[in-house]
Image 1 (cartoon, rainbow, N blue to C red):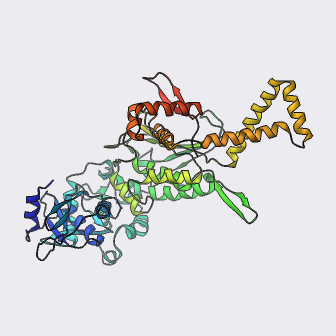
Image 2: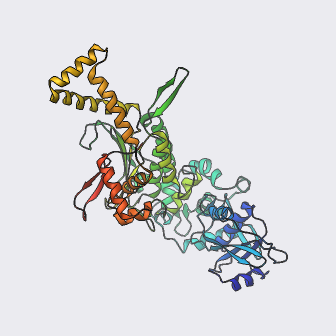
Image 3: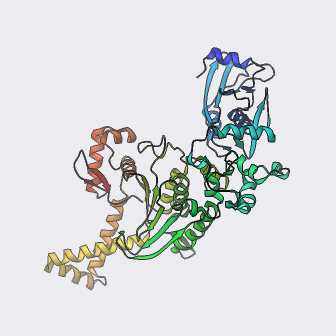
Length: 521
């Protein structure tokens, strides 16, 4: 981080192409263009560029700005809103001087240029910014080629341009990825168009792995496990009878289109529920957006080097999606889903361009909210299976589930009546005389009490259950830090959750784990 003296020195340097000054606090387009240009580092300084907000570009004097939390959040959001691709490496902070605050945005040169903002490549030409011309774009592509690291950026040796479905690329992807005004005058060869978006390697004269995965005519010839295996079971176990199975394969654009149709028709079941004489609501077994998001994440984050498909299993009470390739990079069980890293950078950006994912780093959070609003329990994540990532989404808690609960309570009441002998018979007789079956009356009361108890959970207990669902082997000390209460209170709340039937301890205190028996609606 720069010292105050270094900041003042850069602020007054009018000749530097690594500095941009502005007094505006609302021109996010300009800010993003500057960040994009610094990321591309056309001059190859290999040093960070700096955007100073609160400084006049003409006089280099401070404007008297007072930096607010909202301004800091707005500027920081440019990194992950999906408009600057690939995501820039940047930091945002502010320093206070006697004449006002200065908001400092430090932008590191990108490892994988060219970087685009809304489909346009911005670069620094001396102290000003501009849209890159063809020669400058080619230089950035060659610069990137020498720094290839991710699997999807590597050349797919043995393939050629003939393996790419150029119609899908030109008609579906290109208009979304590149600004329409630039596209009007772009008469370049398709190889160069693909290369500028990192789908073609000009050095090896072949598509990259991302190019084949996104637009390949026969993707599975080159990546045999690049498909989704869907299986529908008649019960709740993998040993249950299989009643349907199919595979989704092809390039990612075709596969996702097929998946979207399949979800709407075959997975999501809607039915009306009576609210009043003039109103009824539709309820669904699952949140369509959440299941779709989990599948998109699987396609985006899976390891395409592992020779097993994505498994999409539907049981009578839940959906499981098992993804080859566990958490990647900086993502860990203890920081998931708040920290993410990308195994397939180009595929992630491409899915953002196509609108398959709306925003980076927010998919799990919004999906959990969608599930809760639909009546589903929050999804659970399993990190303990080596080499895979597993997500489980349970069916919504609705009147169908309540009917099942009622059936179970009825069985218990019948058993109770049998145990009580004559006393139970007398209750049944009394109920019959009053025009109501005694067992049914008891069942209604017990069901009501069961539902009340089901929902009577404190906020701390909800946080404990949520934390355990993410990490079943979590310790009391970790729970204390996440929930914000003492370890002793954690133990008290866990005891209550066990009594209420939400939790069960499997194994020893040291080597065991927590199992969630039922979820909060």
